[in-house]
Image (cartoon, rainbow, N blue to C red; front, side):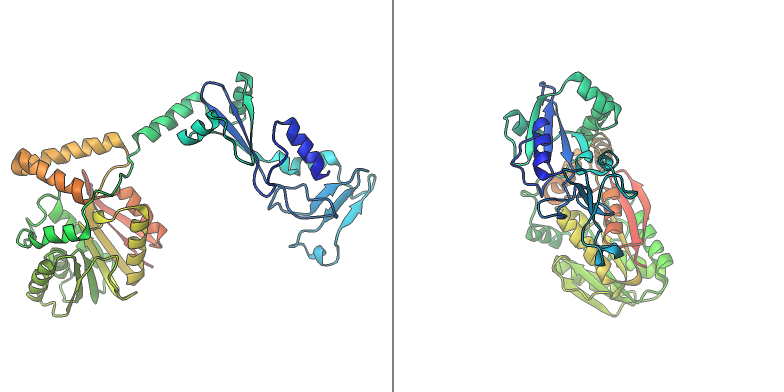
Length: 417
């Protein structure tokens, strides 16, 4: 079957004949009331069989390449992975032969039999289609009949109205990340924490704005010791005045080498002083943004990151940071995180945010509540616990653990095999 015939067939379907045949063909239809559907065909296999003929299978298909001649002969060419390809170039099988394949039999494998139907949901794409703007490989058949739409639904190629309504609601309630252009700079954050050293120098009260801070600290350090029982070197990201390293030293019962990293030099100075008081004599200070610090790879048994990763911004930033954490750990090492988190859906996020507001108001009244909310809005860009747990797996961690979650705070970790 020639390429010319294929184009004639496409013309009968309402598809233009000047397409780029290396790209899929897309056929749009509409109900005339703002809803659009599209059918995306498989690309024809690019393998030549005869001088003017192409394989009629779909791109990437298995088995022989094939086509039919005008006299009905079946032509085939063994696939490159087939041992026969070394001895058989192209063979013809006439009608009546025992190995003959009929056009009807092969029609099920023809590339035009392979397509996907779906509804167009992107508002920008719908606007483009309503304006009549079509790309080089796109065509439109105009309004689809109610019978056409029902048939597609019956075949399971289009969602029902109920399923569409559920999908629309899911999209509407999903919590979206916002623009980060107005967020505090690294320098802004450094300046704020330079002035907070005293407040963060108490194991029990240093994180009073964090729900269950002492419990979360206890959980991550105990989990670190259980999962990584031999600890010789620890990295504390965003160490502040050293609370989490101090707690790990208490739980582990023995000293270890400590790398303390923070934006604030006053915080680092206080952290070094405090960890030295509990027998940690080897403490290296890193005044740096974690993302830029030239830390040694595969050097740490445990990495701690408490109330710091919420300063990461877009997805690329999060992925790079989590990937770097994985690369810094020794095999068998673990990372432990406590942090502010958002929820996946707007209604639940609003519920948790309201309850967190009540907690803050109970600590210091309405003015304190507003103060904390203002600096969160200005500085922070947290993600959900589920987002971070999935990302930890994606960058290479073999096991992840959710230790605790209360309202909009979570404690969790991961282990590197």
